[in-house]
Amino acid sequence: MSVRADSGPSRPWRGVGADERQARRREQLIEAGFTLMGTDGAASVTMRGVCREAKLTERYFYESFRNREELLVAVLESVARQARAVLEAALGEAPEDAADLTHRAVAAFTGFVTADPRRGRVLFVESLAAPELTSRGAELVEEFTATIAQALRAPSLAGETADDRDVELNAQAVFGALAYLFQAWLAGRVPIGQDRFIEHVVQVIEQLAKASSRR
Image (tube, rainbow, N blue to C red):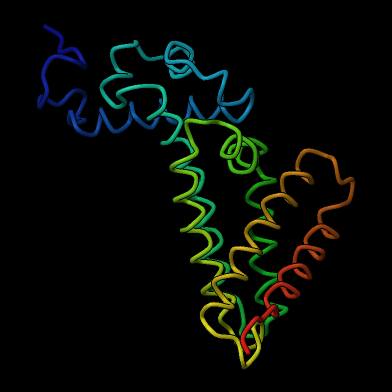
């Protein structure tokens, strides 16, 4: 007598426990949502479409997500988590010199979003356009700006007289500028090569990092 994958909540199947099977199915659904959202936009994502893409029955959707909005948020969180990890790794490995540090971080992040065009669309288009992502998107912006602020605190970038408020404001400015620069460049509205784009972004960051209203 064979044992089916759904024969019990705690019974292993082919050596894989129930919790791990559920986690795998959840990842399949997120990956399917990422494919649809990153290709055709958040508006194209439906529960049935995601299940077809994931090759899972519809009941497994509700095993992991209460509704479509939860899936969209999970997709955004997944891509943002990967992007932030790339950025933090680059900042951690980069030398203290401001120009080298900034260039390393920008090049790593640019490489991440260009390696898979779906990533850029999720991060810079759908996160701003999809109403379902507005709230979580705002929270993720705060997380990214915190990472940016940490880098901007270096005296070689911010200068010797910058205070915490300068750094906070400049981090917000850098995030906003970069979000729209990447959006335009990835969409092909700014027809320049990757090397020049990276160099321009580096210069934007370096200029914004020096802004100060402290008196």
